Amino acid sequence: MRLNLDEYLEIRRSVNRISDLDKFNLPRGVLHSILIQKKVESVKRKYRIFAEKSDEILKYWKEKGSFPKWLTLTPVMKIRILLKAMGLSTKEIWKALRNPDILDAELREMVYRAVSTDFVYSPIATKIQLVFGQIGEEIVEEKLRTLGVKFKKEKELKMQKTPDFLLEEPLEFCGRKVVWIESKAIFADYRTCEIYFKKQFKRYLELFGGGIAIFWRGCLEGLDVSDGCEFNGELKRKLLEMEVRIRRDKELEGNPIDIAEKFVESYADQDIFPYNAEVVRILKNMGFLVKQED
Image (cartoon, rainbow, N blue to C red; front, top):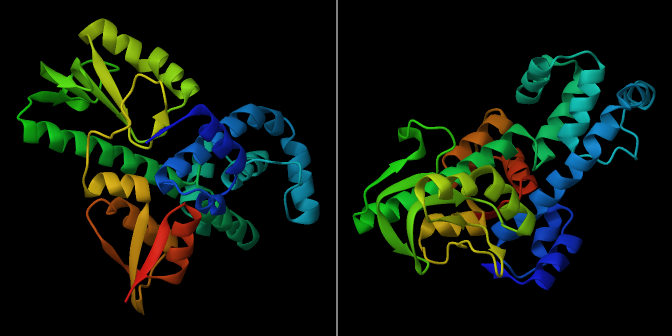
């Protein structure tokens, strides 16, 4: 999907939380990616400023048991600042985010709330982005194999900073000859493309020649990239629609965070998942549209 600049700016202004994904008649994955990029840019601007006030944040927490209203970061980034102010190392903070049960009761509840609601920086949010990236690559790989195109994947190339797919022979794609393909499961605005051009695409062009980047969750009109419109199929639909179907019979037991992560890991291959009320809540918090099957 390609958006014109006015459409994109309106979405950027209007989408501030997961519940806003229902405001526009557009694929959920497109809106989800734009929202995440907006949050990431905000955190990058503010984090250092707030981190310098960590002692003040810790004092407020000890007195009030909550965060000051002026601390406008995502839930997990607030937790990171607080735990660091308490003296925890980066490794210990990561362990706490992965397993809040290692903390005392008060902190445990707060950390659990954070990791079950932060759709940008929580471990499960990171897992979702990883899985979506893998799905995008799988779509490309299946297409190339169907066409009989020989290629090498990034992990097979004994070089640093290589494209996801390096073709043995040029392929006609998007009206040009390409020898490499890069897959990105995000939305591409001007800034995103500029960053990736400097970090990756420029090097690929210099080393290998012409190629194409596919931004599966859409891009702005006028950008010299693919929006994935050349591909169809169930995997692409899953990237764009972010729909999880749940069969409500008996309640699936277990740690909700662990179950939710397992659901995400099998999202590409599984169509219907067993029911757990807390897992449903977590998946909705992460941006999925959850539908219940009869």
